[in-house]
Every structure is written in structure tokens, then in C-alpha cells.
Length: 190
Image 1 (cartoon, rainbow, N blue to C red):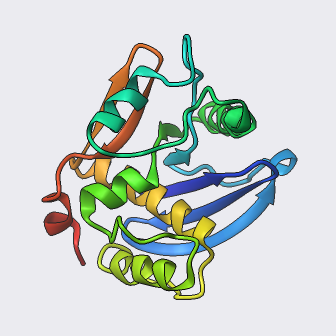
Image 2 (cartoon, rainbow, N blue to C red):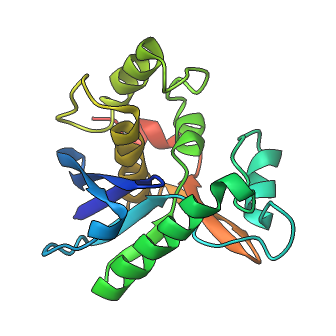
């Protein structure tokens, strides 16, 4: 099964391609360069794929916060461009016929205990995350950027779903796919 994980930025998409538990490649494309000759089976997008009906938080985001998972509110002005770019990517891949999921890599790190206390933007934090991620995904380099790491975790979350180890946090205005329990790592580890 081929899965794309996409970390959405303001001007770029960072994409990781997994074939089951193996990283095939990572690459970066511009927001306006979204095209492909390849149709992945599924896509995990690290960005909100809807806006709140009112306020700055969707119901699914409030539920994640209650679980202790902090996040950027999808309705915040500074985040709206990311949401629009995520929605654009979701529409593109749905049109290709891929299954599309909203994911949140930090929530996956919390659920799988992939050093959630570490900051992905620090060199040492990113390295610790990568070393833990190697338990789940083969062929990972320690030279990855934090955006590539988030893309890989996004794809991993979707892989967990297809193995029956992920669930949706749903609200009336969106849903986020996260691993079911901390036991997921025991089943999936290489």
C-alpha cells in the first residue's frame, strides 16, 4: 500500500511516500505545483481540512485539547492560509481517487510516545524523534528536516488506520485521525 504523508506549509508541501512500513522517498513541491502522475492509495494531510463553524476551534480540536494534545486553532487568522492549502491538497487527491485523512503528527507522537516532550525544531529533539520513528518506519535518514519528519509521521498515522490501530476524533465541523492507544506501537514496531 502506497501512502503519502503531507506536511502543509504556506508556500510548500513536504511529502513522504511510504510503501507499508518503508520510506520510499521525501520531496518538496510548491503550493501551485500540485500535480502527479502517481496516485497513492491514501494520503494523510498534516493540516486542518475544514474551518470551525464559529470561533477559532473546531469541535474535534477541542476534544484533542481535552486529551492533553495542544494544537494551533484552525480558525486563527495566522493559520488560515495553511488550512486553505490543506483543503486544496485534500481536494486534489480525492479527485484522483485516493483516500484522504486529516492527521496531526504531534498527536501521533503523543499516542505512540515518540518523545512528545521534545521540540522537533531543535537539532537534538528532531534526532530523538527520528531515532524513535525508526521503530516504525524503515529507511529513515537522520538528516531529515522537521517538515519531512512530520510528513513521515502523517503517512504512518494512515498506515495505523489500515492496520486497525487508529480512530477518528470527530466533531460536527471536522475529524482528525489519531492512533487508538499507546499499545499501537507494540503491534506495528518493526
